[in-house]
Length: 538
Ligand code: F6P
Image (cartoon, rainbow, N blue to C red):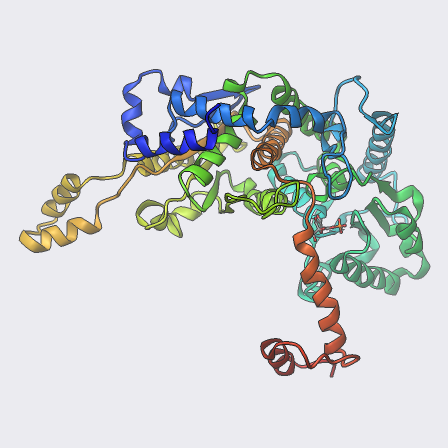
């Protein structure tokens, strides 16, 4: 059998100079190179992948066992091999009666019970049945967490603002005292619930912020402060040690990775904001994407196609980054959310067996909502020396019925950008523009050069009717599975994150030096020099 990587490299060599636009001579291109499920459309026709290319990419998925590994993930096998754990975030949103077994135990019934408790707590608070220590309403909720215990809920609460009818939500993640100070300053502790979200309940940022918030509550209400505390964690001994009432603690298992955890109790802020019914819609969307990933034909399977186009741009075309460009202001936090999802999952340099990877793993993921980005970094997308595959997200309809003209402009801009990236502007068109501006001779030529757009820059578009809870669930599950597909092709473990450990350990050591408890003079002169310059405890 031919090596699928070699076959793809050869195919790329033959097609690299082709214009993507020329592929549209085939009138069926959009229909054939887009796929839809439950109202979510992925258009990958503005890439340089044709039928042969798609076949080779699907061969690669087959050769690397992506679908077999997918089945192992869904059935609860310990595919997170360095931590000897399953990766069962899909169980958190399962709508099926099919048991999911870990060590001979069906994990679904306890998950459903926990969800029921979380919903009851959230609905009690939202309805005012759950009273503050002073007998009033909880008007504000502050979620304290970082990474997976922050990015998902923060992104989703903003994304689903039109459904937000619960208390006001605030998020604190950074250990920088500036964040918690600015968030707490305008709030009345007597009306505020603090949710401490941490899978491990050891994360220094979260524990430090939790300590500050608890002290803030205690100053206002003494021992009654515990009534204003809730926790989300896998470490129940630690939540108990902090004195949090078990009735206000929501647990999840260690086989749910932090960055995959927003479907369970880590989603509590989302439930508080939009209510249990809407959160159910969010889970339904994700579950629908799970079913699609499990059952759709490979040629029409959105996660597989999204993952394989990622592999194509990264490993075959050599593009180092990808831009996430939501033409949806409420998805402003999606790029940050995807940075953790993609880069913490797949930013690895060894394969499952510990051997060094022979090709690149996760690309750098970045982005900002359109249209703001157009007035900032799109210059580089259009005329820079680096090619950045762009991923656009756009709704057919906004939520602001009275502002439909805004949404039309938004759609026009989104479509114009992907078309411009692909089409570009050639020398003749640029010279005609320069001539129209009155330039002549050598100056015309110079001016025209600056107005040429190389074009032939690929993009994908993800389109949906409206950003509802269901659609957000679909989108997030789609990206989770894309990360899975890419990780499976590279043969890496997408579910551990050892790369975050070293910095944490060194921070502990440096803190000792800052406190002048233990100075290590053998460290490099930059670290010691900066330490001296920044100073320790006063
Ligand atoms: O440091 C990385 C990390 O472990 C992430 O994987 C995780 O989402 C985040 O820290 C927060 O962890 P925890 O929920 O245990 O506080």
